[in-house]
Amino acid sequence: MNPFAGAAPGRFHYGLWYTFLLLWMQGEALLNSLWGLLLLLSLPWLRGALARIADCRALRYAVAAYLLIRLSSLAFALSPKAALYGITDDLRIFSIGVLALLYLRDRRELLRALTLSLIGFTSLAWWALGLYWHEHHSLSASTSGLEFGSLASVNYSATFAVVLLFALLAALPQLPRRWLPLAFAFVIPIALLQGPQSSRTAVIAFAVALLPLLLLRRSLRTFATAILFAGLTLFTYSTTPGGYAQFGEVAHAHQSNSLQIRFDIWATLFRVWQEHPLGIGPGGFNSIDMNDYRDWIAAHVPHTAGEYYGSDALANGLQGIDLNSAHFVTDAHSFYVALFTENGPHGLLAFLAILAALALLALRDLRHADAWRATLAIALVGALLIMSLSALMLSVYTQSGGVIMALLAGMFLAARSLSDEANA
Image (cartoon, rainbow, N blue to C red; front, side):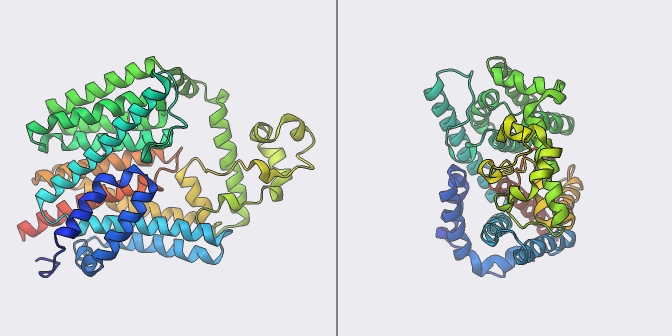
């Protein structure tokens, strides 16, 4: 049964949807403006879109619980303004998933959505690579400091890139042969940027997800593309001192400065949560008054205290200085730790329930007879695995990472709905 009951968006609406898929990752301004306009114009049909997941009760309840917890945190947030901004991010992410359910009404739209998303990210990746080469004339330095949309932050961009690369590898068997040059045009800049980005988390997570994909999809196209990516990535790592340094820290974790600072930040946030068991509210990190924890910081996280405030200040017990002048908890460096601090264990469990509900739906369809349904199930499971592993060390589910997951989830749920409608 058609959930839209005859009502359908027009060409203008679809044109705006295509523009959004092609351009949103180019920058925050484009993302917000295109999303806001598209959502406003699509309001008459959102109820029909939600009807396509009427049977996904666990997913709907988990999303509702998560959003309710986030909204209720306005009452006790350290910074209501930051909390409101964080909740807007949440609503944006989930509404983009609903928009995907609205506009992906047949298999041609699924193919167009995937193609346009890959073209948009490919263009951004080549642009980033061009800016980087123009700046350094080599592959031996970090991309840090260059601004190019969703690829502006090196750790996050590496994760987003390999998530979309995994989705491409999953979809390769469904793409027409004439589109293979597009696949290689996407793989090459993403691989060449991996070394300068030097994100061990992204590379390790991608490798973990890649093995089951190769076992599920014993395809020459997939294998050849994976080999191309691996070869180019190893080449760039071999020319980038930062790449060796990143993986050297894995073998000597006890000597890693960046890892130690992360551990100290997590310990500090756990201490903050002990005084705020309901959480500090979304985006409340910059509102933590570090002076309230002066004695605890000096006693329990001396490494980071020395790094940020100096060894002389640490020797004096951090007395007489404003600890907010060098606020070291501006980023939790872990999505799970961030969410635990912002909304407590119940907020974290609600989000994990969303991931679990999506994963269970997709796992059931990994070998489904419907090729597109199986393809997008594989892409979603791999993306969930990569993002969830990366979220241990990065806040990847915020901003662009959340949008990517919402679009992939929307594509899979739309393919699932189309398959069920065809068999009804």
